[in-house]
Structures are given as structure tokens and as C-alpha cells.
Image (cartoon, rainbow, N blue to C red; front, side, top):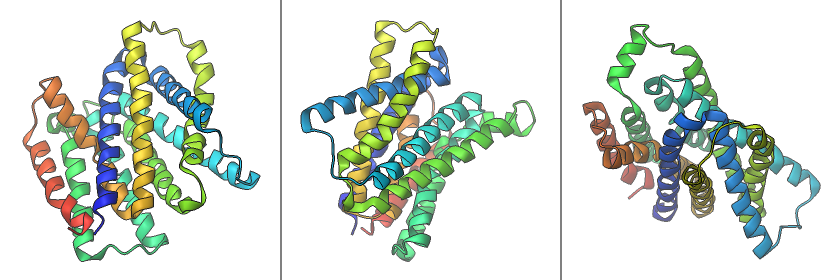
Length: 286
């Protein structure tokens, strides 16, 4: 039974889904780079506040800090690739590909760490992955892409890179286990993205209204909270469960667009959501 880790993975999915919903709205006005920069910087500032209250971890050797810093670089690059793939598009191709990052993490956990999955878990992983991909697809846009009315390769290539990078980061976080404090992990991921984003924010010529700035800060805060839930989920269970569960952020984004933007759900998306509902209990061994 992996109910606790599943719940934390789903909480991470909700946070990342809300963040991506806001990114989709803000990105059209500011562009990928500016949205990425502001969101990463706001998340880093939230982290700075946490460090000021609790104190920075100082018990790690330099080589471990270096490894965490490298992980932060990959994580920041993964976010930029994800935002870029969604902007270059078509979204009907890029989004389903990027949403497979949880499956990448799960496969790495099973192959490298020999994490037990079992027959039911394997079926659950397949159903969840297919459901996430299906719920991310806009069939009409996909048909236009197949007919050559939209350029597919650039967005698809970025999405593949984003999925591999995000899945690798998810898996790598499992390797640190309980040896590294939660704050140290968050510090590594968020500090690198924040520092890299600072010059981008300073040089950005995009006009940022107070309302837009509030949304950007919300993206950073919610994204950081989701990351904390994900790491806690890893410590409560296995990446083979938490990774796919957290990848449901794509489904959350689709549902939010349906609820608040009145976007209709296609038959494929409804089937995808149904597959997710079938697969999640199997994945957790319920």
C-alpha cells in the first residue's frame, strides 16, 4: 500500500497543475523566458524567507552541495524546456509528450533502483500514463499538425527533452533519500533557477502590471509548495508511485481550463481522465 506517498504525489500534481494553468495565461502576455524568470525568482524569494526563518543547512560536504547544484541546473533547464515546448507547440503534440515525465521517473526507479511495482502497479502505471497523454491531447489541433498545417518538430523535440529532464530530476531526488534535508533539496532546485532568472528579469522589457506580478508570484509559490509535496512523497514511498501520480498535473490543468475558462472537454480527454481514475488505485496497490 502506497496511499500516503500517492496522496502527496497527487498534492504535487494539483500544485503543478495550478501553476501550469497560470503559466498558460501569463505566458501569452510575457513570453516563455520572462514567465519562467519571474516564476523561478518568486519561488527563490519564498525559499529565502524560509531560510531566514529556519536557517540554511550547513552540515553537507562540498561535493554533495555541488551535486545538488548540478541537479538544480538540470531542474531549471527542464522548466525552461517545458515552457518553451508549450509556446512553440503545437500544444496538442508538446503537452502529451511533456506529460510523460512521471513515467520516465517510474521506469528509472524500477530499472535502476529495482523498486517493486508488481503486475497491478504496472497496469496502473500504463493506465495513468495513457490517461495523462490522452487528457492532454486536442484532437483537432493534432489533426492539423498531422496534415502539416503546424510545425511539429521543434515543439516535440523540446517536449521530449523536457520530459527526460524532468523525469531524471524526479528520479535523482530519490537517490538523496533521507541523507539530505528537505530544505537543502529545495534550496538546490530553487536557488539555481532564481539566480539564473535574476538577469533575465532585470533585462526583460515586458510590462508587468501589479495584477500580473501577483499571478507570477503565485506561480512561484504554488510550484515550490508542489515540489515540497513531491519530495515528502518520495520519503514516504517510491518514485515509481510518486512520479506518475505527480504527472497528473496535466489533467489538473485541463480540468481547471474546463471549470474556469469554460473550455470543452473532448471525447479523448474524457477517456483520458477515466483511465487516470482507473489507474491511480492500481498504482498505489489499493
